[in-house]
Length: 340
Image 1: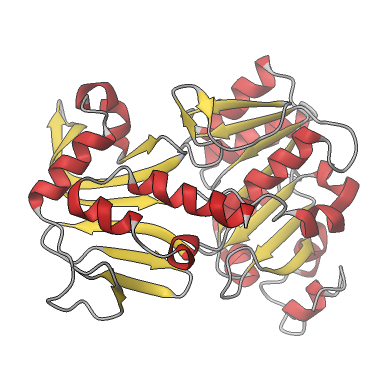
Image 2 (image 1 turned 90 degrees about the horizontal axis):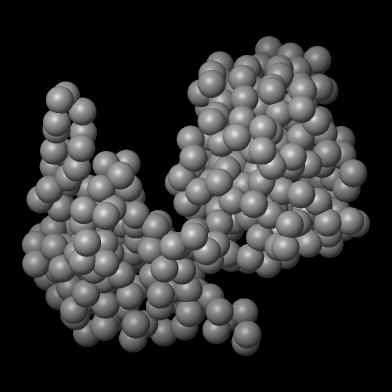
């Protein structure tokens, strides 16, 4: 019950970003809906929709959900979008210019709000946004203990680095957050010095300098820092034992990860990939793996976010040349750790 109340409270703080009847209808939704909702989406002239674990639903005028975007659904007007946008910005659009330029704003509760509209240019660069056309509120989920199985399986080998791979909405960020918390709290031994490089504000959910998510007592947060620069900043100034960041991919980030290895800091990070085959076919991913900074790869998959489909030794995959060996199956790799 306590977990459910906390989860529903998270949804309600996310819904607070939206104004008028839409916000009222969202707050009136039953607990089971709030518990499964991942995103709240408003599009000008279109039905309000919720992305849940069971799929996409549309909000009816009566407050009920439907699978069909019919005429009876609650439609987001231009006024709804403008009012919600101002509310999200705390009625000070100017103070959020940098965030708006990047397309999102982090609000109280650690929820990230994606903004779509017409780009405003200055000297050939995007400097802002006008005529807001859609808003996506991503409900921040803090699932304490969701990384228990991974932590128990990897144990001390986590100090060799971990790359968490999965498709969008597979639970990568939620698990990263819990790994950071467990390391910082010392749940599997002594507390570790952890630095979270939170470029998009999703791991810590920092609001006005205060992380909204529990990252434990020994965690420093570099909020809004580009990952490559943040990793180097952490190495120079914070002496971390672990660096945690989301969605690696660029050459600059791979180089920074390699520098962290040389500085004695282990990296726990995520990357987009729908399968282990897809991961190893991506040039950027292969470059990351060859840095030697990631001893293990955890692959997420399945219908339920956070489901582990396999745990792999990076060295074994590279040595076997997984991309070319037809006889080397995902089941074989899972067998390394006895996972079916």
